[in-house]
Image (tube, rainbow, N blue to C red; front, side, top):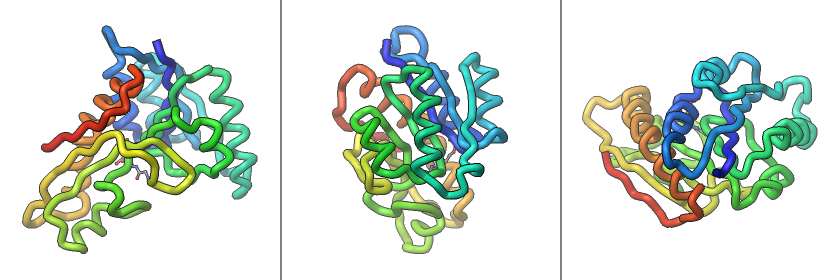
Length: 197
Ligand code: GAR
């Protein structure tokens, strides 16, 4: 079965959804959860789920991204992953790192790409008066939030929505979409998945 490493920066709810999905006849299994900070909530949750968890703190590298990425890469190699899943990993990765994992690295982004790359996607979608919003799983390429789209899930924007309400509605779909895409991807199937709430 394929070995999956999951990179997180925060609470790791997508990581939890991915780990929980990898049971039974699943073509992959989780081998490492790696954070860029010791206090990422996802580390505790991963250990509770019985998955090895570790961190490579980006701060001592003081903005030297390639040096941080070399350390991240070295730690990842110990786990010998076949697939990397970014799950709320909030460090920008340079071309040097991305090219080492190209074709084997997925990301989830909280918008219907190509709309709203980058941060504050929910506030920006509301501000633009969108009637529909959602999330995207894509292969990671060197350009931020670009790369072949493997799946999207749509949600309606509702009257009275705030960025937090919308984020919660989207997150629920993230937890459906990412496991569905990973299962296919791990089986070598890159056909696209489209979900609606
Ligand atoms: C998720 O909404 C994910 O799509 C987003 O961060 C959140 C992480 O939540 N990712 C990005 O914004 C990537 N630029 P989680 O830690 O509970 O999975």
